[in-house]
Length: 472
Image (cartoon, rainbow, N blue to C red; front, side):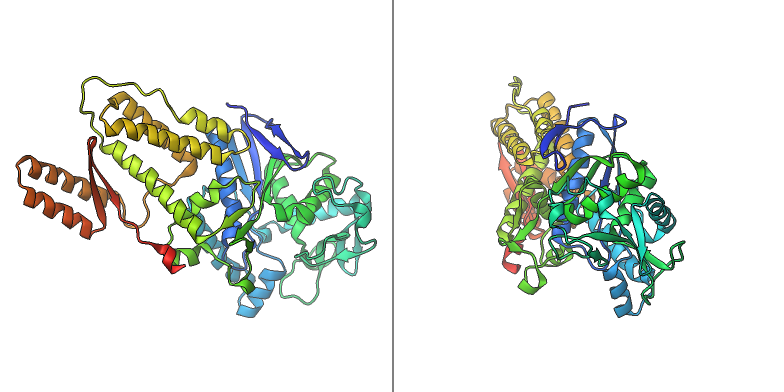
């Protein structure tokens, strides 16, 4: 296993990863609230978490991940009531859509996706434990966490406890304030359509308690890594720490890792500004999943990512360059007897950059230096068979993290076989000096959107891309 370093939001410094039970790394990620389709800001965080998971695996670690699905809160209940549907039926639609988007964006599935509504017994038990230890109290039919009982509050976010409104109680699931006081653990029945019986009365869980109960169910009182967007640091993650550590007396999370915001054209994404996009909307405009994945992954997770359609088109070009390189390596046949061994390799440097706080930009720069070096060898026909095979192996290992080489749309194995067969047919025609037939084959492929390029290393092909940027 390779040493792995991450910036810990709790200590505010980069730290060497030392999991509780190596070689396993336990990872908890805050998932979506399933009242609507996930937007590209959500997927910036989910893509970062996927790159982290894959990078840890590339470095020899074994990851066990839990991602929660918040299917009961103010927004899901309001949405279900507007739609005239039971809560479960309403949220099922968005959970199915979320998983479909994950698959299209090549985001690996976590080992567990617990739904809040399936965790009610565990949530009630945790709330009762906090009541028993005098870290919580009942008021107006609801149960609140007693902030004064946890003096360490604010360590993660740096919020000034002295500035928190004294005596204020917060019931809503979405926080617009800069500070909040005692926060709700269990919301007493307020004539809502959704609720469960409990020792403290009929009601439903508050948002924060869900994540603590879920992580404890699968990982116990402590876990290694907890990820999410930087906007969740306060109050959500701060509240998770307070209620979890107050209940168990143990450190809840060793390493807190947060992804920065996604902006659109330099501004906060907002429906009111007309710059709000889901992945599904981008796909309808003709943009590929691989291009969006590459763009979301290519900026360091602790830097803000400015989404523009020009940047998305540049990401598409980068993906096409990598795919062209893969096709060229696959079809390359050495044409000289004496091969010059390549002394420039990719995988070890790529892995080293990722192990240093996911320095993806540096890793990608090294990857494209490698592509340039190998292409130059193929241009003059001096790449040996052993080095060609090694280059393919290293490219496959790198793509085990990036996952952008798999074709989009219609480009599948059957089409690839068809193209390769036509290329062989064209080669035979040229050998027989039947240039009219060779040109006809080129034109036939071009009509199907396949571009041929004749090089010293052999014939290369690529799929002609439409220009979705004009449709943004």
